[in-house]
Structure formats: structure tokens, C-alpha cells
Length: 481
Image 1 (tube, rainbow, N blue to C red):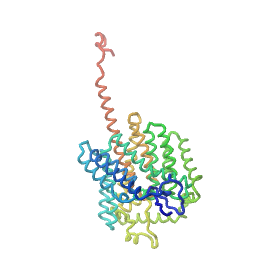
Image 2: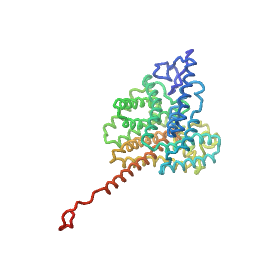
Image 3: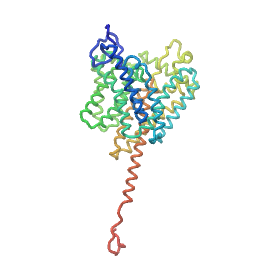
Image 4: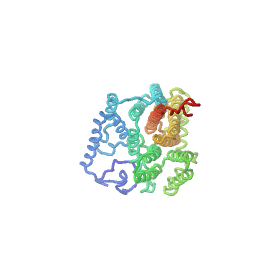
């Protein structure tokens, strides 16, 4: 198609002989764009992002929002030219950190075990990187992950109000939701004939990672739906959830199917409306069985018939790889990205076996950081889950902070999806997971403050009770009994 350029807007669709369908499926079809139009788009992104820097220097929490927006949406990847490769995050991060240091507003990390666990885990992965056999591989991944951890701490310091927390959640929901809607519409328009991929150069570019991001997003969309008052907006958000389901199925990710199934079962178990939960599961199953093509059903059936699936056997080989490395290096493991270390592959993989991604966050952490790293990682997830449970219990009888209990419940659902799907995906450093950990710690602090205010107010009211009414002296000493 001479004279036409493929749009940079994603999700990417990797399929042969897929004809343009409609402009609504940007990234799927083609649009004739002149050089000037492409340059204008690039300049617009430059102007938009750099115009936020003065605001960030004035209000540091805006830096967290812009950082999250660029991390999740990568708006510069929707352009051409110099903006496409420009590293905007470094400038936003620098402005946010300077503003955080100079801002006069109170700044403190939540006093919660999650903060200490995150710090301990980061220190530990730094130690394992120092002992790694392949130093270049280890420190490269360490550097990328350290930025995630750094802004996890900055987020916990700056976003400890309901308004700021909701702003952060809206950024996450709209950024990932943008691609989920496009992927869902594409799946509907092509009847699932092609696979949906995530946006390039993001942490969820891979089809499996994109599917997991969509899975974890569903409960957050549900929470934000309860936070809006406009009836029509609620219906739009509900419709977006169903379109997002098509995006999840369109990725053809078996791990995501496990994740969405686990979330639905967890909801049924926790919900008082059992019949409604069963109906939701039935609807999701119907989408897969009726709408999706035979190739999708055949791929999903390999979950049950894993003995016949070559890729499943490859995963088992990589899991054994991780166990064997941890057996020889039980304390520090093999370091970040040790699965791509040719020396380790030659030692621990069977002869003739092709190396691949480990496809399990648990074996990923075990192999890279040893049993100490795995224990710390699991403690972060378990502590987050039960902290959410405590928030739900404590807010149940307080209507003014019941929103926090609802959010905590939805975070629990997202964690179930992450933990179950993550058993089959290489997602130990998944940004969205650590964002949810940070949100949980902040939520706990906000609930503690709110309940402390209730206790203080109740105490003041008790002190202000007027004295007993005096009566004429008599049998009871002048006071009414």
C-alpha cells in the first residue's frame, strides 16, 4: 500500500493478510499521513509533556501522575519522529524528585510493614545483583526495576489523600483502558482471528503481559464506577469492562484465562449475590466458546492437556532450571535475568533444550534471588492481601470511609488475578502490582487517620455531656437516679 504508513497507535496486531477494517481500529488499519502531520503530532507531545514540568516543580504529586501516565500509556510511542525515541520519563522523574525534596508540604512514608518489606526486597535484589554471574544482565534489569521501586516510595509519600489517590487510579485506568478498548474492538471486528499485543516499549508489550494488565484493571474499573455519580458514565464504564474482556481473550493468553477465572471464582466466593456471580462466569465462558474461533479454543484446551503441549514442556524445563540454580545458590540465586545467561543454560538445561522465558513469577524470583528473595516477595503479596482484608473489616460500619473498604476489596480481586496468572507468566517486576502495594499502604494510613478522628470526636462529645440535673434534696442526695 504505497504512500501509506502504519499508525503507531497500538495494541499491535501481529498477523498476516489482515486487511484494513476501519479507522476505529487505529493500529489495525492505515491512514495517509503527511510529513507535516506527523511532525505536528510529535511537537504536540513535546509541548504537552514539557508543559507539565513547571507544574510538577510547584506540585510534586503531579509528577507522580505524569510519571504514571507516561509509564502506562507511553504517549510518545503514538507519534513519529524525534518524540518516538525521546526519554521523557527522565525529565519528569528529575522534576518530580527535585520538587519532592523542596516542597514544604508534609512528606512521610506510611508506617506500615509493607514499606519495610519493599525496602528489604530492594536491598536484597541489590545484593543478588552484586553476586550475579552475568553482571551486565543483572544490573541492566536492576536499574529498570529500581526506578519502579523508587517511584513506589515517592507515590506512598505524596498521594496520601483520597483526591490524589483517585487521580492516580484514574490515570492508571484510562491509560491501560485506552489500549484495552482498542484491543477489544479489534477482537470483536475480526472475530478473534488475530492476536492482540500491548503497546511497544512498555512493561506490558508482550501479549501475556498486556492480558494480565487488562485482567488486573477490571476490578479497578469496577471501583472507579462506584466513585462516579453520573449514571451514563457508570454505564459506559460497565460496557468498557465487557469490551476489555474481548481484549483479554484476543491476546490468546492462557495465563490470563487462568487469572480471570480465578478472579471470578473469588468474587463468587466473597459475594452475597451468588447467582449473579455464576451468571458472570457463564457469560465469560460463552464469549470464549461461542465468539472466539476454533484456534483460540484449541489453544486454551492445552491448559488441561499440557502433556501434549510442547511449550508447556518447555516451561517445566525452565522451572526445573530455576529450582536447580536455587539448589546450588540457595541464598542469592543467580541474579536478575540469569535465565538468559548462556553459562547457566549450558549447565542446567538438558542438552538440546532451547532456552526461553521462565513463565512463572514464583520460579523467576526463586531462580534470580534465591529462597530469601522468594520469601520476601511472597510476604509482600500476602501482607498486601491481608491488609486489604483488615481495611474492609474496619470500614464496614463507617459510611464516610466505606469507599476505602470497597477499593481494598477490588485490590484483593486484582491480587488474586495477578497471583494466579503470574504462576504462568514472567511478571515479577510488573509495575501495576507494585502500584497496588503502594495504594494499599496509603489506604491503610488514610483509614487509620479517619478512624482516629472519629475516636477523638467521640471523646470530645463524651466530655461535653452536661452534668446531671439537680433535684430537691431527699432520699437520693439531690440528684436524679
